[in-house]
Length: 114
Image (cartoon, rainbow, N blue to C red; front, top):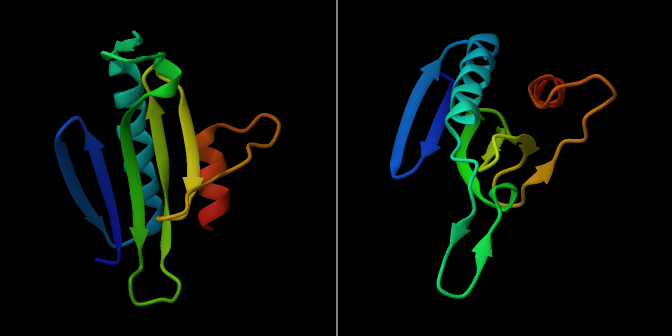
């Protein structure tokens, strides 16, 4: 299975494999929306600093594959603590995907990986 969707939320990591790109993107969108609705939407107070919800990454849903091609595709979404979603491309150096007018983060991600 060339496409892998990895969901990282709290201390849990879950991986799903797909033979085709479209079902993988559908699952990525579904999981990111579920994380977005479950986001705590409250500040995180530490001893030294308080982080606002938009500064927190509540969860991450990543897409990888196919591994046999060079370079392999690495992209995903970050779900912020306030429930907002940002799409990115890259693995080590993540680059935010600019959304065009009327585009959602998910449609911008779909455009970038095709």
